[in-house]
Image (cartoon, rainbow, N blue to C red; front, side, top):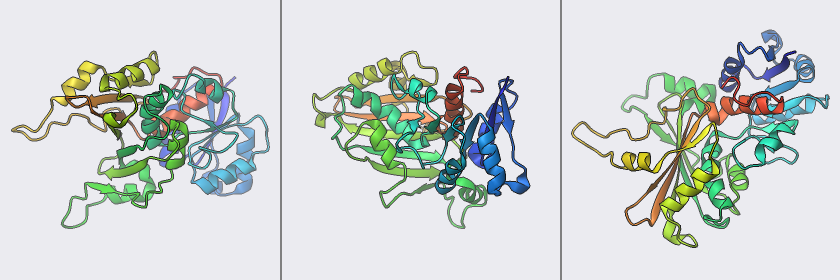
Length: 325
């Protein structure tokens, strides 16, 4: 018998992609609300309590309200908002984060989907804090660029329209108050005592993402080399299906790309993993091994949102982890 799933907020960007990933699966039946009753609390409450599992694709306050409407103890919830990512009683939905996380997700009725930027940052940093190569007190910076789909309907409409006169408006920085909503989960789940300095940006491309952590290796205790970091990441993710560490040879080849007669070669394309639930990690080091750039490549709507939600849903319902992915 198929498990029933209700996507609360299925008309949004993430909800639509989750619905697409679940389409055609014989092991799941997606329940839908009458569009005319989408904002009817009684209609939503009925479905929130009737389904075996619920995926919340809502703003934070609406997600908290939806959880409050669930009275059934058997309903499993995946929340794609920021509301519960550091909340007590909620498992963090990054299955590859450590060797215990899959079991924590599978055994929980409340799972908070990670943010897209934190997925890249934690994916790069958590293995290194666990290995003692980066101490919890070390000050970190994370630079990132995402496709505009992560900004919701308003930003999507803005970027898909014509750019302002006199500019191509190809790239914007934001989060200049240094208080981005992803910081609490970055700090906690990367194993840090302090939040990193986070420098997010958005580009004029729909989806895809690059997240980068630059490191002054000479300032770290023990002065690890780029090779030490690479070895630690490879060991941590060995055998993983959705997280891959680029080989040393591939990273070395990418480091050879430079400006030529035809312009700059695109060494890392932020759109390269679009439509997948994959994340690929890279380690680049300078000639004397004193500095490194850790880079994560992923789809902000895939492993950074809808793909992760489906992966978590599969784990919570005891289904094959990669089904629909």
